[in-house]
Length: 145
Image (cartoon, rainbow, N blue to C red; front, side, top):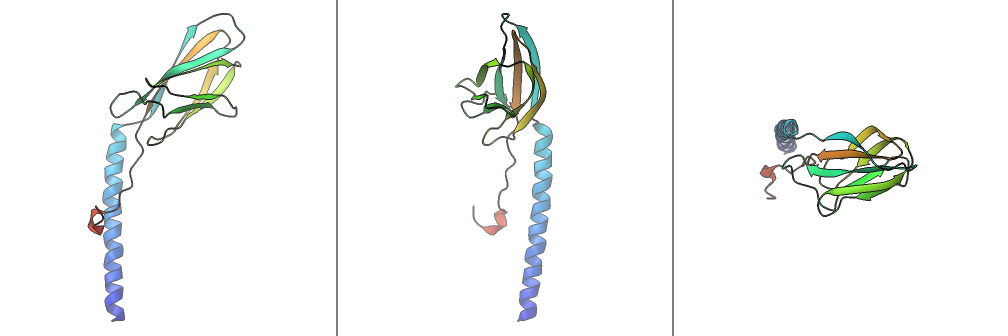
């Protein structure tokens, strides 16, 4: 009886391992299709002593704006905002400096845009594409679906 349970347990572990390998291959193929990315551009504005950061946040899988769920945070500060109903965001009154900009959003992979220069009297445009986060489904063999 003890040997029977050992065999069943071994088969179960092998089955789980095989399912995880299959899932890893599927996830890697999906990751090749969608990658998080960002672009930076600058516009001149007025001669103020602060800068502005603006842009749009888009879903990399379907090129549609991510509405009211993405946040844009200047790392190491309390400065940030959220995307609006069109996926746009705007942060004004930023002291000139170089910042890392963190963009988290539930259901998407976070992205860190590094070394974004905010210049006085200029608008820095940071457009972001967020890739959907990777799902971790249970194997269908478990009969939960």
